[in-house]
Amino acid sequence: MTARPFPQSETRTALTSALPPNDQSDSAPRDPRFTFVPPSHARALNPDNTIVEGMRGAGKSHWWAALNSEDHRRYLAEVFPEARIKDNLQSSQGFGTRVDPTLAPSKDVLAKLIKSHNARHIWQAVIAVHAQFPSPFPQEARQWEQKVEWIKANPEDFDVLLYKADDLLTQQGRMRLILFDALDRMADDWIGIRPLARGLFQLALDLAALRSLRVKLFVRPDMLQDKEIQAFPDSSKLFSRKVELAWQRADLYALLFQCLGNAPDGSEAFRNHCKQYFSVEWAENKAGAWVLPSNLRSDEDLQKALFHAIAGPTMSSGPQGHKRGYPYTWLPNHLVDSRDKVSPRSFVAALRSASESPVQSNWQYAVHYKALQEGVLKASQIRVKEITQEDYPWVDPLMEPLKGKITVPCEVTDIFEIWEKKKTIENLTNSISGDVRLLAPHWKEGAEGVLRDLEDLGVVSHLRDDRVQMPDIYRIAFGLGRKGGVKPLK
Image (tube, rainbow, N blue to C red):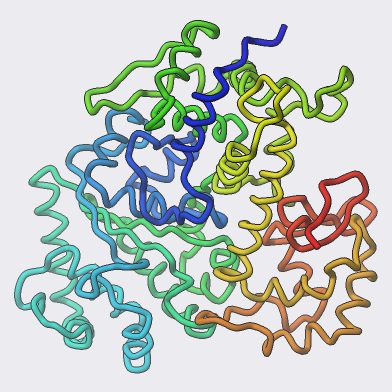
């Protein structure tokens, strides 16, 4: 039996007020009450884990910013103790977007420093600043050049001051966590990025032996797959302990319900309906945030019942609607990439778009199933824009010639023939614009190499018969067809 639908007007209001606008970046953390920590993320937040790997939109920049917020750390310590964020933790940002230039050298400063200094010395200077080394380290010097020069000239003094800083933190019962994000923005190309990344990773391995001074690096998957970046002694000891930011289906819906339960408008009606018709009671914490009930974190049957009371039980209004899928599984299934990963940003974008779509007059639920389909289209547009304009500019020149010409699944040769005819691969270096010109890692290997890069990125996959498939989250916005699928953009 279908559960009683959530009140339509209040629930739509809660959705639009709780979910961030689709053009909002996750680099600035929202109010702590909208925070949910999946199990794998709890391990990633643990100060003892140095390398955190995450796809675009998985939460790297969100957690980088949240860990630097005292309010968020306090919330995490209370509501998600499994993250092991204690009251004694202090944090600062060693590299990332919009960081105080006295705390982290910018891309331009790094480009100047790396011409005459070892990358390791540069990052040691950053650590010295954040660890608040006393004299003789030139802590008050305005130029990074002076600080790096001192590190280079005084390696023994650096070791002594580092040991003393760590020992003082231990004696005081404090922990200092230095955070690094947006490492792909350290330089304009891989040639510039590789030595800086390798030096930072190597230093991170050395610092792992300290007791109270920690570093945490949020890293893109392609950087961790680069053999030149990993080319330093004992690198496997560092990379084998990486933690991946993964989102399971239950995690995505837990995030949704956490947001609805704390929505600025409509949340009280949502929580009351949960209690009256699903026997789910919410509790308020000391800071005034409503804490997601434990059974809504992982009980997928309960999550499914709640979501179907919001969006209807099937993806159709007819008696055979179940043949077209159930909203609870249909939505994440159409947002998944070829590696079976879903970005929470895509999930939220689809639901935000669906909540803003008009509901048909004869529909009793807050969200119409056709609005979910429109939401997937919107999420695909956002996802493709993110990877082509911000992180992976080499993808768009590869996809543009295929638009309207390919229906997936297709033969590999169908793609290669179009690329050859359009001279796509040989023109790739000239077709990338923007500040950061990172080429496909294996573009020198030709069509086979860049296709493998697309597969590593999750844009395409190979079926057992070796045909190429593309998931909807990319296919729709890239304009490729698929029989029976959501129509591509034209």
